[in-house]
Length: 74
Picture 1 (tube, rainbow, N blue to C red):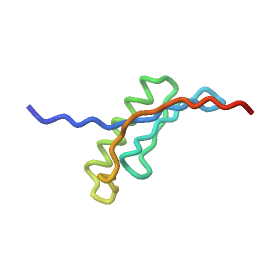
Picture 2 (picture 1 turned 45 degrees about the vertical axis):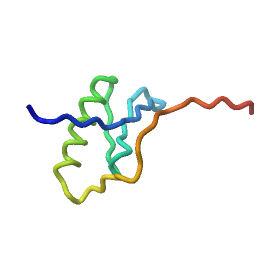
Picture 3 (picture 1 turned 90 degrees about the vertical axis):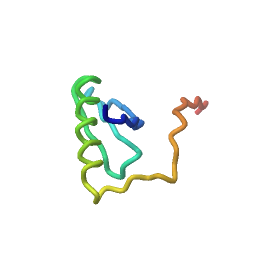
Picture 4 (picture 1 turned 180 degrees about the horizontal axis):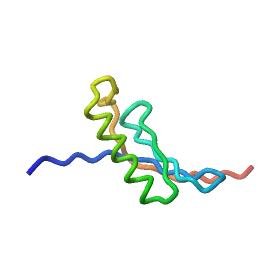
């Protein structure tokens, strides 16, 4: 069995309702989809392309910890 590796992704939604997804482990690794599932499927393909392409920079100096929502009074 091949070893599995986990990569963090960030999912956002733009004004038109499109889901934008990024993998911070790779510089410039982004994709999108019209549903969350489509966006995640698309970022999987983008991550695989980054892993296979040695031109992409994998940032080994950082370790993903998590995402928090910060509330501000404006």
